[in-house]
Image 1 (spheres, helix red, strand yellow):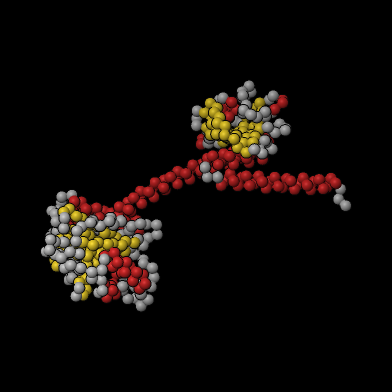
Image 2 (cartoon, one colour; image 1 turned 90 degrees about the vertical axis):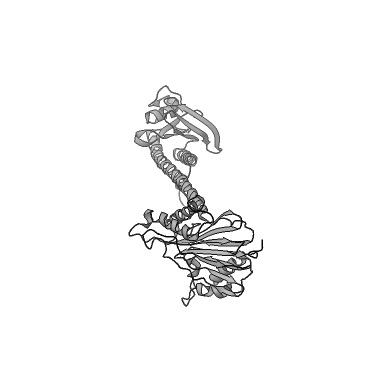
Length: 441
C-alpha cells in the first residue's frame, strides 16, 4: 500500500500539471488576441498565474506617460480603473523611462532599480517589467503583485519572457489592424468604382420601355468588362451604348471605366452635338482610347462598342458598331438582324479614325423591340458546342409587345438552361421596346 506521502506527491504533481495546462491556455489566448486591450488583459492573467500573484495591471507608454485602463484580481476578474504615470513617476513610469524592471521585495523594504519611488497602487509587493518596443524604447509595462512570498530575480526573468511575447503580439496586432483598415479602405474604393460602372436605372422617357441585366463572371467583382449606358438630353430622344472590353476582372474594369466615361464626356461635355450621331460618337471614342497606354503597340486590349440613337416620335433607330454583335429587332412579322457596316473593334487597328463610323438607320413601329447583348450570353454553349446566339432569334419570335423586363428574364433563364457550364464571361443584356405609335404625338 503506497505511503501517504506518495499520495500527496501524486496529488501535488497533478495540481502542477493542471496549473501548467491552464498557463498554456493563457499563453494561447495571448497569442490569439486581436486587439491591444485583449493582448494586455491576456498577458496580465497569464502573468498572475505564472507568478502566483493575486493582482495585475498592464499598460502602454506613449513617450510621455504610461497609462492603463483596468486592473485584474484573481477571483473577481477585471475592474475599470484608469491609471496614468508620467515618465519617471511611480514604478510603471520608471520602468517605461529606464527600460529596466522594478522589483519590490515586500517586508524587507528593498526596491531594486528604483529606491524611494512609489509602487503600483493596490499592491503591497510587486514586480514590474517593461514591454520591449522599437530600438530599446519600452512599449509599455506589465506588473503583478500581492502574493505570499517575495518576488525574486527568477520572477523578473519569467515576466520579461512573457513581456517579449506581449510585444510581439502587439506589433502583429497593430500591423494586422493597419492592414485590415487599409484593405477595408481599398475595398470601399473598389466597390464605389464598380458601382459607377453598373448600369444606371434607365431614363423614364415617354413611349419607351427599357430593361437591362448585368452579371460579372469574376467572384467578388460587381462589374467587369461589360457596360451599358444611356444618354438623354431632350424629350423623345434616347442615345445608348453597350460595350465589351476584352478580358474580365479588375484590369478589364479599369479600361471599362475609362471607356464609359470617355463616351459620357463626348456626349455630355459638348464635344459632340445633340442629338449625337452614333458614328461620330464611336470616332471620338476611338481617338481617345488609342491615346491610352492600354492600347499601345504590342497590347492585346480591345473594346467592342455599339452606339445607338432612338427618336421615339419618328420611330427612327440609328446604330453604329465597332466590332460589337449585331442586335436583334423583334417585329410583329418576325425577328431581324440589321446588316450593319461594322468596323473592327477599337484597338485591333491602331490608326486614328479619319471619318465617322458607318451608321445604319432602321424604322421601328409600335411594339417593336431592340435586343442588344454582349458575347457573354451569345457565346454560351451547350454540351454539343452550339452557341446560344443561334437560339436567341427563335426565342424572341414570340416577344413582340412583351414587356422589356420579361424579355430580359426569359433570355437569361433560357441561356442558363442551355449552357453546359456556368457563364465564364461577363454578360449584359439590354432591351428597348417602342410603346407609342411613331408619328402620332
